[in-house]
Length: 326
Figure 1 (cartoon, rainbow, N blue to C red):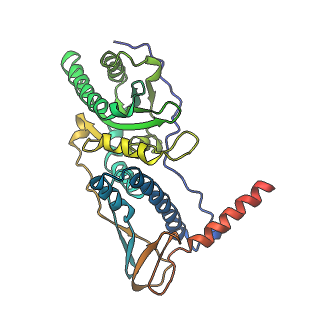
Figure 2 (figure 1 turned 180 degrees about the vertical axis):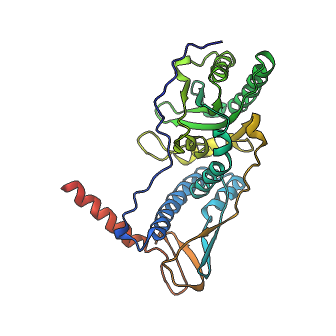
Figure 3 (figure 1 turned 30 degrees about the vertical axis):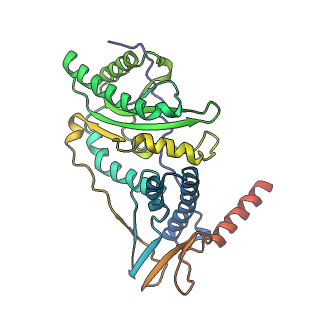
């Protein structure tokens, strides 16, 4: 069966966020990494505060978000070894980056080994907030039915990985849950898409997508592992707290990533609960570093700074302004 869909050979612009490290501002690359980690933590705290403020009458949910607020708040230093604790929540930016690395390391090679791969996007029309949770549950069930149908009717066993993602349209105040797949076999990919449209007749073929993956480019795999929601609009504006909470509640308890076929036999990565850090620009000592939100930095009882974030940020911002003027 063919959907007559044109397969794009253009590589998607899916990649990890890459950071241009201007070492003039830092003692070394490890210092630079810690600086950007501090900036991410500040942004995460602002996001978490917006969610908590949006749900004043939900103490149980607030407790989950507070755990992320305190993620990596304390860094323990034992001589030249540094360790921070992790919350491992889906809405934590730092933990999501670690999750991406864990999944990539565990599944990249086994996925590449199954042959030519295709990046498949399955979508449905946008929906209202109250429809989000049951719709995602329906999508998960529909995908399972599609896999069973292809195996029984066409004698094709699918190999790949599926991810749930949800975005938000602030203009229409609607949500867009969809699936991203890394899938072997073009015929199987077309079958999935065709049967998906039968499961969701309101969806349009134009909104679906199949494209070849360049298996020599590691960044081709990253998008599948990256986020359950991008959390920002197309122009980079952060979703409001109530929108984020709606999305996180809808995916609570659901498997964001699902492997199937031969990939299912690969041992799932163990989630690290602590994060070792290489901070070789700090002298060896026994110390406890506490995160101070107003400093965007970790500090000691004697006010030593781990990063000196504010000064560096000011220098970088100033340089950007100078560059714009010139």
